[in-house]
Image (cartoon, rainbow, N blue to C red):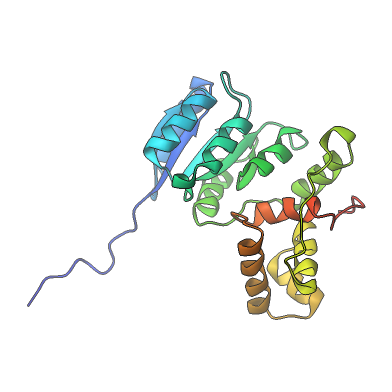
Length: 232
């Protein structure tokens, strides 16, 4: 009789690259992550340029990216990481100090899968890493919707134009509600659809708009002109 691998072997840990220029903060994050089952730090970067190089070499599951770093800021580093075809599985989670930080919208446009305030608790941070690693977007509607709407009203941060001609009218409706921060269940209730149908529409939107995740669909909703009045 052959001996197979144990059926309940634990899954491999989520591999995290830390990109933070403050050594004390980086060390604290490393201790937190490495002492948490299911997570492991695979590299540390003190500059944005170093984060790009390490992400390319190590292929982590998640890059925990500070915005303000020397050499290359976190936004530009995120853009490089997310634009690399070989790193399609690498997700970036932005760390920011203020919930109205003008960099957050640019970070999402650069390809980040979400952002987290540095005031978050350890539990919230660990949960955020798992959410992003699973391929979902980390969007806090009460912060994200307000932030994007506020900055898109400014002339210096007008959204790029997004062509939505390839999506159906129903998909436009779903996309607009995603842009307003609604969950799948809220969209289903609003449009009188099943959760499964909403998920199907979202899957088609991701494919048609070449979006990495839900965060990118929020950006597409604004850039496509579906959200223009700043309503939360």
